[in-house]
Image (cartoon, rainbow, N blue to C red; front, side, top):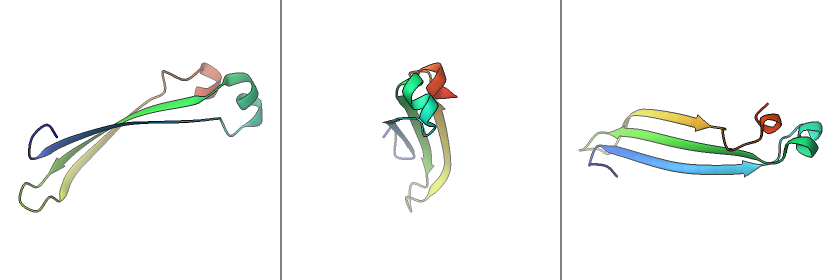
Length: 64
C-alpha cells in the first residue's frame, strides 16, 4: 500500500492465444496489469479503481 487510502496491485498472466493459427505462430500471450484503488479510510470501501493493461511483452501475432 502506498498510503492508507491508495493501493496498487501489479499482476501478470500468461497463456496461449485461443485462435489455433496464432497459437502455433505467435507464442505466448503475456499481459501485465496494474490495478490502482482509492479506498475509504474508515470503511475500507473501494471508491475508485483504474486498471492498466500492457501487452508489449507479447509477440505481435499473440497481441492480435
